[in-house]
Length: 281
Image (tube, rainbow, N blue to C red; front, side, top):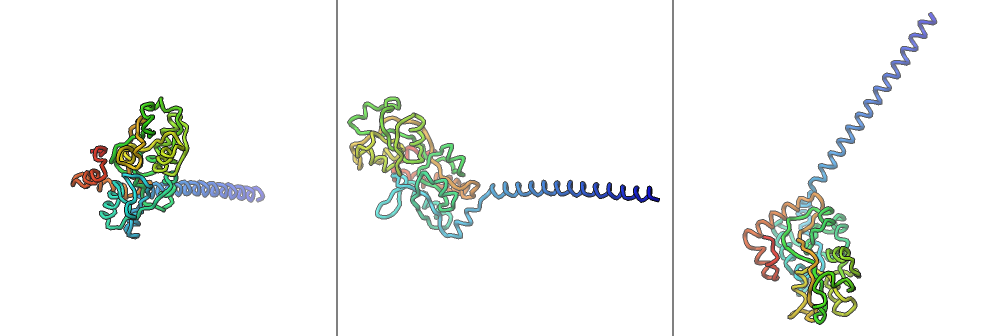
């Protein structure tokens, strides 16, 4: 009798162990399935960010810019320029108003991801940093980073090698700073490209690195910086508009660009600000 009772207890213990193992396996499988489902949901939500609905609900498109002629600059208290005009037209195509917000260029990604702005539309070079952190539109203008110096010494600085001993002013976080670092130049970071020009004009720095489109508009005969000129071209690059990763506004912007090219709006706007030669056809 004692043997029978012992055998029954042993069988009960084995059954309990097997049940516990089965529950553990089920729990682990369920956890793995839940984790997979969560990962898939995260991936799906990252794929498309419904910024368009948010912009329409707010009734405005908030555009991050800096003071950067001929792309974005103020005249009579109003922001104008090639990018400003195109951004305003894009907002109109969405049925909303445009609002321009001056940002610290070095913080553009943070401003965008923080929701303070809906896009960065300011002659933004499509660098690796930008394209990895933002959802970018198709490129629309060609550009380059150029060296700006005083006219009376320009013939001494015709190429990058000749500029090695110069002290440069560059916009913080800009493509100009990237080129200064790539060439090993000595440089000081400043607020924006307009400030970089002021540093050269005042003699605080020997030279500046700015966008060629800005240089064409801002230095030389008939400008506010007649004593300055631009010499060496350091690279070749393209401009694009930046939105949040996964934003559905990117595709809308590309559709807008295609329509603006087809109906001549983009070219006419470019002619207004004398950047038509840089348009990407």
